[in-house]
Length: 313
Image (cartoon, rainbow, N blue to C red):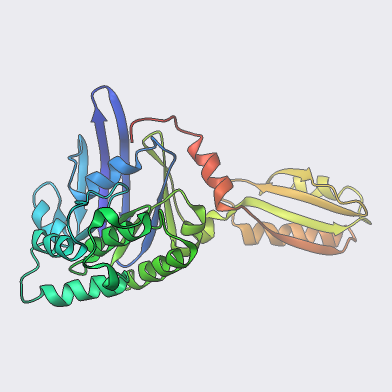
């Protein structure tokens, strides 16, 4: 369980993260979204213990990060966007070094290393210097060090960056596998990654948390799409008089009546839909369609991100 309360981080007079609170349950894949400068990197650095907050608290797995950072970090895997690898080190030596830093004992280390190497398909690159690897293979090295020790919390910043389509599919499968035993926070600019992997999204804009929503609910807004036959008289007016309805907007379609129906915030959508359907039937028209309007994640993200200005990330 991750519990973040009133978290802020300031750089001088600039506030990068501003009074953010959220909780995350175990074994979930959470998307952390925001434009450059929204505060994502600062947030991830604070969650990892790399950066201290200016205000607020972080509890991970029952431990207060400010009081017991070592205990939290033992169960943490972190893949930063710019991986701080050593180009002259062999892949095998680097991963062994990373395992040592994580406190994985000599007796446990061979199994931990083999699991990370197999999961990232690095077996044929173990004796290569990291500096000679392609961008995709360097990314795999970064993921391998992040998953050493089977951490309970994984923070992955752009994990598919530099991977080809086949490698991207493999990485998605790996993230899903890891989520069976860990909480994964995934930061990415690629909306397809979020659609494919995440069950919930947190959106930062201007340092503030502007959305915390499950993906299925995010795709639906408080608007219904209505299509009915043209026989009715003032169907739009009848629907607009319903107490749950804010506005009825014509949406075109010659030969039938096509509207978008905006509902008041907090309205029980099924109740409103039942009342609207009754209006259609009472008017003598035939009901062709009455369904929630679906939004794509990319348009929702652009709309929310526009609410905040760019700041240091």
